[in-house]
Length: 288
Image (cartoon, rainbow, N blue to C red):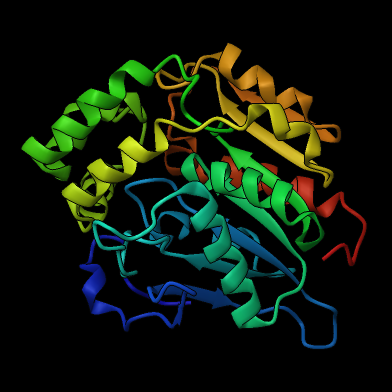
């Protein structure tokens, strides 16, 4: 773990390791392992949301490290990872394949999978496509594709805002869609905006346009691993009707954070991590 101060520039940290995806992109990741060497270790993979990076999960990691190895990444086009060229592939199936290639690179056959928003979408599709690779799935503020979302009409504003205002100005204008800025720690909003602004606004606009067209809700019954779904009760992006489709997963637990806006994993990291930990610890030992 790094002792990098939350407000310091991320460039002060050494570059995390990387692997090459099968289409040639360098994808950055970080694996923290402080588990006892005499005890069989299990790995938890944390997939961040759009406009984010692996740093979004910094406050989650201490809640997991005594029992679990923790693997994070910068998904393609985010953080320190490469972005595909304009003609390069950008899709949820491609990002799910990136995940599998990262696990193969690290020799991880079976893991616990956790995703925030877009990361949850990637996680759901991966659990459907490669069911044998995942001992469990936990998804926060995610539905299986954004096309049916009640907030779909806002994505045009998102793409235009990102391209014309830039990431920082767009996020400051729309910050209350994500969390209540008066309810988070001093300095958090500035850090959140600065961290997100590391990403290229043109790529992010392309990314949002791509994400807005997907929907694989009809396949959720194919998820066979134990699943946890945590959803914000006052989400301006997805309605509770949108989230109801998650209940079609055969073996699941469903938690609602009443009154919360979309970015629960950022605004309430300790609560999310503790609910995740309780879910994981209740699973049979050695599941992954």
